[in-house]
Amino acid sequence: MSAEFAHWLGIEHAIIQAPMAGNGSTPAMTAAVSAAGGLGSIGAAYLTLEALAAEVAAVRAQTGRPFAINLFANSATPPGAADPAPMLALIARHHAILGLEPPTLPASPANALDAQLAAVLVHGPAVLSFTMGLLPATDIARLKEAGIKTMGTATTVAEAKALAATGVDAIIAQGSEAGGHRGTFLGSYEAAMIGTMALVPQIADAVGLPVVAAGGIMDGRGIVAAEALGAAAVQMGTAFLTTTESGIHENYKAALLAAADSTTAITYAFSGRPARGLRNAFLTDGEAHREQILSFPLQNAATRPMRQAAARQGDIERLSLWSGQASALAHRIGSADLVRQLVAEAAQLRARLR
Image 1 (cartoon, rainbow, N blue to C red):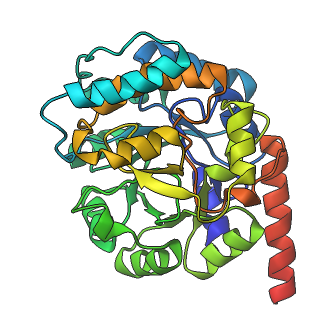
Image 2 (tube, helix red, strand yellow):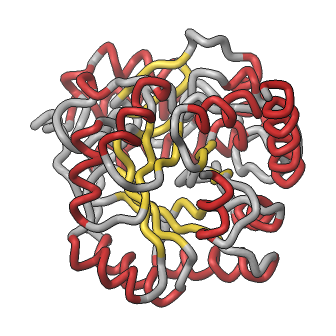
């Protein structure tokens, strides 16, 4: 199944580097993964159209192999605090530690999805993946007509069925172990915290589409296990965060490698949407005042100056340390070398299991 899926995508190995919007994934990482035979991904959710064009050009300057672009779909978000003053006061305490001026209420970012989709059609990646909702069937059809394959993210069987009904080509099954933002768009995220091992076979049985397993997969053991569960491919994010090409600060990489299986938490504090990351000072402070958190994307915009300053200073207490539950299994290694290591580990394990 994985060999057929890889061939359909035009790649050698059914390994997808997760799109990590922000500084996690970089053009160098995307290109290295694709050049090594996997599918690199550009996390474009927060990029301006100009920045997206620059990243696409940078990837294509380094490899002619297929790659993906990932976007956030439109979906309802949990209502946030009506009064922004308490949250701004909370953020101000962390600004002071970083040497920043007190924050001001940012304008709520405009919805850029339509313009982003138009840009994707121009850039023509091999794959458009998306999370946090559905794309209209008309958009899926336009992408298909342009030769762009589509993958939507589901955290439940119901979400997978909803995605299948729009005409997507494949389903990314995001287990509860996964780092970063939860893709849940039907119901509460709390009701959709289903582990990868339970989620993948149920989605595989429920929809007649290829399933990409995501969440907690860090090495060849995870790849082979996902295949046994019915997955056609794996998507891995945390495993690539500690690679040479990762854009995160070295202090963040060290925190990932030193983390335990119990040191992550789901938080709204950084963005206003649920996301899994390592516990730190701002996560703890924000979750202690959950009722003060603003809705997405306003909370995300309000914390951006703090996060950017923390990234420059290497202050991991005020940075969104997105991480899955198995980051201690990561390695300091090049992205291409990691792909080759994963392929070798999976092959060795398959041979032992025969």
